Image 1 (cartoon, rainbow, N blue to C red):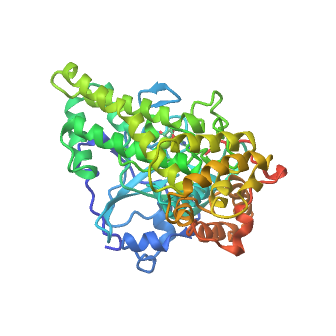
Image 2: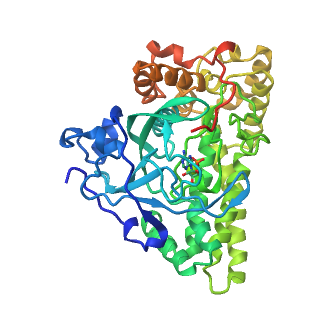
Image 3: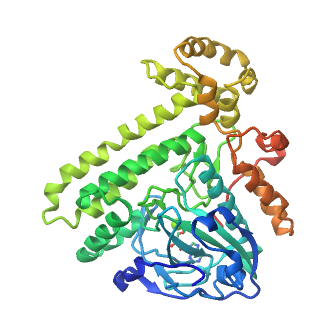
Length: 470
Ligand code: AMP
Ligand code: MG
């Protein structure tokens, strides 16, 4: 077997999915391959007679048990009783050289019973966006799904205009979502809900006991995750309950983006009219999503009423967990490893001044370990007055520069660079794609040759809206 599949989800009852092969494409061409991840998965491209065919879905490899998973979800707060993989196929699972079990999924692999009105396809732009951003997130140290391969299909997909089609191979700790629990709870399929709970515990949180133990573990993982997003200026963009992974990984890179100039109200997604998923709302939205998970999990208790108090307490703990993790990360960002009263005020004072001075989020924090941070402020005096207090506080720290350089990346996948990379790839030039991947693999290193990738966009480079037209 060229891929050592070891499938557990496919052994669950068929009410959890529909068995479905990917739909072949006309002319598959492998345009990206992730050697590092392939090595962890013990997949050698040389052992695959035709990697393009496999990762386009044209050739189902031995041991794969292709299926489309069933789930539901709240999208922008509205309940959708049935979603499911409308354009993705789970090939199966592999236990990597690190002992971790991961899903291998094709995204953009054709219609399934859950496609509703969609074509089951993806176009090249979002496939390359997800490839670059998810790999950058991994290099930044954020739990995330990853990208193993990207294939051009040789077919056209129709979005706002005709565009080149592509398939992404996504690798994830699993694809279980809050919405996977919601669908069985909503349908009253309690035995299936229990089965799913046991499966999720065994797969992700073996130390957790029972539905409330699982809830507690997921709440902790999600609190850590969102605090980490906040510390990097990352905006997910579609924090629907079907895009909230049980594993605590970032999943579903649609209209996501890293902020350039800091402002708490920043929104990128063109479909998020009311700013539900704005940067500063993310900590509240994750709590909302986890409350939906709690509601679903409670359905399986013999007497759900007795569980309500415990579930409520667990969900109510999330803001505190998130705030503590936020504080730990932002302390490090300004060079603090010790804890003192007033640290949170110091951090918030900086953020307020950054918002008022159009300071670039990434470059301001990165510059704190040098002389030029004040240049990031339209009124440098706004930095100087803050820095007086800050320098006094730093006297209690041994090596703040080292702390800051490890907490503040030099490189993030800036939205305008992603758009430029996509435009080049559509024109057949993959050099910007490969360069972004190479530089973003070492985001905490100064890379003098890549200085241009640290610049925020010039006015004519600003991406006006990140479309969900994925
Ligand atoms: P997403 O916005 O990517 O999280 O997708 C939400 C739901 O829409 C999921 O059930 C997807 O499978 C489905 N979906 C998104 N795009 C397509 C498409 N082009 N064809 C079929 N289903 C899709
Ligand atoms: Mg999704």
